[in-house]
Length: 331
Length: 208
Image (tube, each protein chain N blue to C red):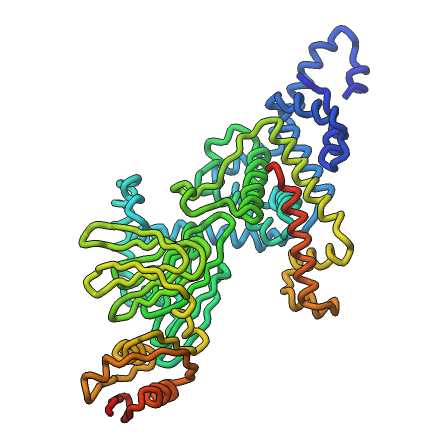
């Protein structure tokens, strides 16, 4: 048994005071498995003697046990939403888990959403900023909702459910945990760390990427497909599920709503009207149909629907009439 | 040990030496035997014992590499979770200690490469999102020692004010604005200090 190295030499090495020759000696000495064990034993002893930080062990243990518990508890729930590759690999497991899921769903049917998800909801004209436990920042536009799992968020993947429109600034975790935005449309977005805007409202859905890289998973008929987006890409998914990718020079204008700014670039009044309907809960009509085709260009700041309507009317030199939530544009 | 051996009668010395060696080995394993036994009977309890035994020292070790309490705790926490999820305690053939320290070092290096080299790309990530595993050889073990010493030296070599700002930012969970207010310096200065410290850390990573 090689005993050329003693604790003193190793401690000197950890402290950065070993000579090159001593390092050679240690290197030869560790070759023996029992000495390798001794190396780690002495490393542990050294760390305990020269401690650097004092973490709260009880709190950390509690957090860790909770994570274990949740990862076991939400196992069945997670299976509902994991990618197809999961049950390819673990067919039997999936079958078992699926059975469990059914039982749980019956038991928790009514309160399920409340128990499993933290729900953020904005009404018309309201914008909410949300910070998730992983540090990701989300700005939720008006008339939208975001569901975040109460349990297991960030254990293996980070997953949220969006209806409406939101801007995401996702924090990259050092272990590259995936962040997935699910929508009630037939697509989802998968990211690492990045900034992008998702609009999954009633009409066409839009995804715009400001920074980083994301992957869009969607269904073409019954076939699962995916595309990778780079900054400046805009993907429009129409009501039939057709996908259309184009490059936009200024992706940030798609998230201008965060600052209550509205940016239009040759945008038809019809599109503007749709946007107002979705954000402010109004119903907009045109007395003369050709008005819908007129276009607007410019940046506007508006705190509420009336301010915006006024600006538009002035700009196009037309009139509007608002009664409760019904607005009519006319010449 | 040598003194003990000297006291033994000469003729039985070789035999005793063998016994002593065995005793040494069993001591190494013995300090974990209780944890091992507990894992066999009640894995949750075993996990708790293991956690309490090594968590603090492992964090202390991780922090030498990453210089952030929060990141160090995350790394160690994840190493324990992997041990649990992969049921490492059922198939481990070294001591827990050797496994834990090697894993923490691995993850710390992965983190540093991610933070400073931004080499990790979404397209090159392996399917299962596993961290890269570095093969453990005597040489790499010593390289890890040298790496954390380099990082420590680079922080020690910083001008005092710069070092102070950096440590406040990494260990006291303070925002740049708060540090600027507390030290009565400009926000830009705080940012410059932190940039400088990070650049030093990045430099010490060269070659890893």
